[in-house]
Image (cartoon, rainbow, N blue to C red; front, side, top):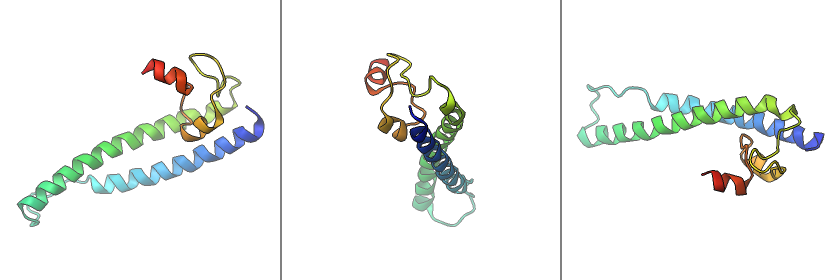
Length: 113
């Protein structure tokens, strides 16, 4: 991968990290405990509990994404970065822009999963 593409990818990852951090902050506000003495009604309270569960799952996924992006960022300068861990062929740049943390090309990822 050439230097220009690496810099584009680095900038993209940094932008994604900031966006994910903002999402995490939003989800953390949404998953605060729901007070039992909150007079929102039984149905509304059940909806709030269900919504909280969905937001907790999204928070967990966002934290995993953040960890993966932060782990990937310093690897960009590694000469092996961008090579598929399965077939050792270059991972297409568009895939890296979509999933910078990906260690596999689409074909090998399909075989792995």
